[in-house]
Image (cartoon, rainbow, N blue to C red; front, top):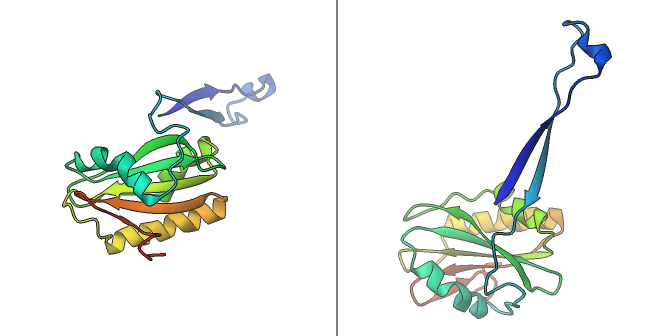
Length: 167
């Protein structure tokens, strides 16, 4: 969860004397990362796509809608945080790089893994899955955050975009 606090600054006294000279108020915001608890994955190393599948299988297969998860990793690729970045409908979810990388940057993550489910049970990535993964990789490269994999989970099976040659 991201918390925002507004602080209003008053203009200097010399600017308050005339209406015509009043400067617009400046709005300053503070954004903080709030830790909401601990996860059994924290500080655990997810060394392969099968580790990711095992960690997220129950969570993803129980959902009736698509969910997109970001796994935040430190420099040794240990989990430092997990965020459900988007929740959609039966057949899609809206994922935007700006929203995904907000928590990545706040957590100072060195690398990320992406996970999402297909409620239909078929983990074959769609054209849209491949396109958003490409965009997320491009943004990660620009920011210096390595995207290690994107795992799509279906019923009792998964597809790793790295292992299955999608990139």
